[in-house]
Length: 157
Image (cartoon, rainbow, N blue to C red):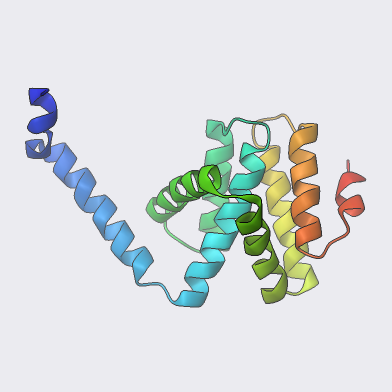
């Protein structure tokens, strides 16, 4: 057994980090069901686009965090945590759950709000300076799930 691992909980920095994460989780757990569902769905579809090319780069993660801070009005600490949770959920999700999540957004929001989500997806996809075909097609797929004609998305420059 590695002694550094056994004694790592005694490290004051690890204790502070653990306390910070626990507080962030407690705050997220205290959100209302509707707010939590919205945050969950938004972060999930953002991560779907970020992962479309097989790699979630640092710039895409940062852009997702910024979007969550600006549009979901959560703290930076929560945005980091929610982004990480979404990343792991996206790795484990199947097509059915992906579709159900975006369909939930479709039923919850009017067309204008759904179009703004598509714009946020585009912002994440282009955060690394490369808006590739795989990302564009993932956005078109999500747009269709949101009730927006995918051709509208594919025809955008």
